[in-house]
Length: 110
Image (cartoon, one colour):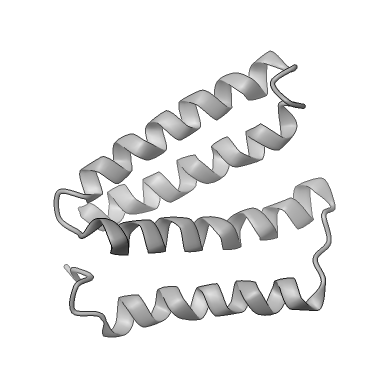
C-alpha cells in the first residue's frame, strides 16, 4: 500500500508543479488552486508513505521521479526543450532511483 501512496504523492506533486507554471506567478486562480491542493495532497500521501519507509528513500524517489516527469511533461505541454547535459542528468537521476529500488535494503519491497 505504501507504494500506492508514494505514487499518489509523486503524481499530485507533478500536477501541482505543472499548475505552478500555468498559474503565471499565481495570477490565474484555477491553476493556483491546483498548486495548493496538489502540494497538500502530495505531502499527505508522502506522510502516509513515511509510516513504512525511511524519509531519505521516500524523498529520493519522490523528487527523482518527479523531476523526470516534470521534465518530460514540460517538454510536451510547455514546449520547454532540454539540452544534452540536462538529458544526461535526468538519466542519472533515473539510474539512482532504480539502484535504490533494486539494491537498497532500506527501501521496503512489499
